[in-house]
Image (cartoon, rainbow, N blue to C red; front, side, top):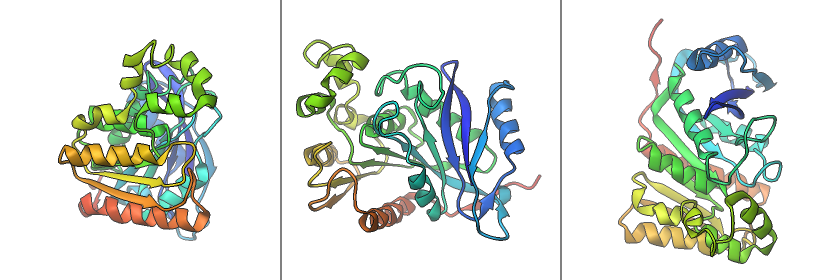
Length: 289
């Protein structure tokens, strides 16, 4: 079961997705009540966009669940949330939350590529921890491509995060500016200039510059043939974390690009969850009403 939700970030109404594990359900009216109560607002629409075809579905509230926050890549409609990824991620006993970032899918505000939009992830995190069926001690964050910036800022600002995954992730935004000539116009417009003009803005959006502030286990997934976010981003992030004595695991995929073929993508997800589950405690039942 998947919902397209509206929630509040910096006073803006922004959009995101909440996907339940397969075979579980929740009345949309109950979810809406919890979200509106959290913000003391009655104008936060929700749409159910998918439902499990599994018969005899169970109520999600039978226990507290781990969560994977998926920070999408791209900006605007480019690289928007991949809902089929949400469904795949939900196969592994996790609730999935994916912020769309402000200014996207009808949300208010403007995406700043890891600037003020970071609050959209943090606001989503706080909303999740308020839900009675979420285990706040088992929240992981995954950043794909540009989403690694938002994922890093989340774990730095929320040290309770259980684990962090960088999948084909940017680690040095100034390097991205140098490598991706096609992105320079967008980056200058969104960030306010080039790395020469506004170096601090690029450093503030570079996970490798924040590596010392990451205190949870990290998994780096990257294809060696990635021509959108060069493999060196993942390698450099792994090396930096190793130098700092951090708990870091590296899953390189030889010859693969930014997106993996379906069969390998599915295996990569399975490997990712095997890694995540090392740091999760056993599920427990929700409190009786």
